[in-house]
Length: 338
Length: 159
Image (cartoon, rainbow over all chains, first blue to last red; front, top):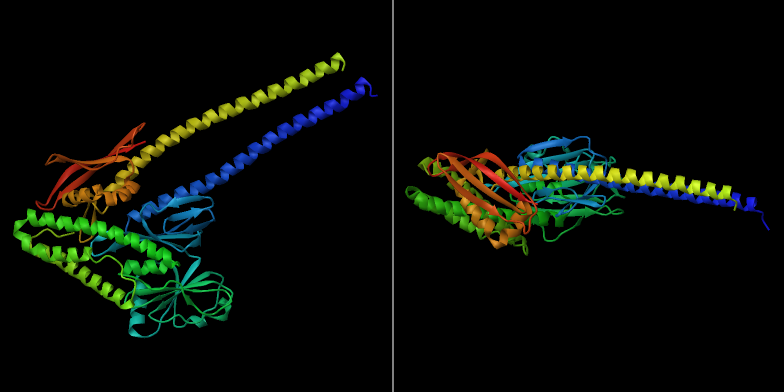
């Protein structure tokens, strides 16, 4: 049997061990919680900062900026919004076009007005200088016209290259997106063989087709059939900025919805002008008729390419007519329609 | 155990209890400080939200004055405003505008030369606990008479 003194010493040590463990456990839990909170706080701060940047840039037209000092993290975009880690941020009805994944250091945010022909909204383009946009064109008229148009439209901050053939360009360690201007996608240089590469074919008639090349093959496959469309400069750039056909279609349908709301307001404004400015009543008739046709032609026809083309031609004609109506009205001392 | 050992044990437990009590006091103090700071942040956020909303409304193409698609700063077109009220109250667009404007009341008040007031949007939060009001000066353009009225845009955000 143990003596009293012999029992007391181990009990003291057990007590010290237990108390020490409790104290250590307490601090370990506190540190673990604080660490988790700090990480979440960093993501939340990033989302809040991005939201402020996107809101601010979305309000001003024709602005392009490289955003410095953002923490190096990955952002995922879809038609509803974006996410970083567990946290998500919404686009808040902003018409935003971005690649599905991008590393935000350094982030390029660029806005462009969408006029159809009256102002509908600003398109917000988000990308990074780590993504290289390679435009493949030939000397033919339509391809070269597209090249000149895109060259003039693209933001100075975007990493871009114009080439005559995609097969001569070697992989350089950056994400490369190929855009074929009025020509079919060609095979790439063998250095791209193990990479997933996105491509876009832009037809001069307004049809865009999204392609993808999977690792191990050297041939682009069409991602979404039938093809999508662009109406003007802003929608043309939007199709270049995204790498996902579904995202583009979804954002474009949101844009069309927005356009319907604004076209309705302009149409109501014309009705008010007709009744409030009787002298100009007759002069508003063509504009009112064109706006009415415009409003009734917004549904997409996607079954056949000839339907898509006829729809596009119809929209482009109406835009030009409404623009001409608007320019003509002040010459007769009538308030313009927009 | 002898009395000396018992005393030592009680002394150890006492030290531990005091230590834990001190930790609890520190935690309570820290949390109280944090909650004060959170309340301050919430109030700051609400005011900022009202300011942002007022700026957002002044820049909504539904109301904006534009000449050849060039924006005129802080200007609302009367005809657009009246048409926009119709589309904003339409049930098909209710969700869209709620996502932008949330629970708020937005009014324009023309002060000079004409005096009139128009409620552009009104969605009051059921059982709201507080509301923040923010006003910005704006021009209200009458394209028929080509007159700019001086007015204010009043935004009331419900929390």
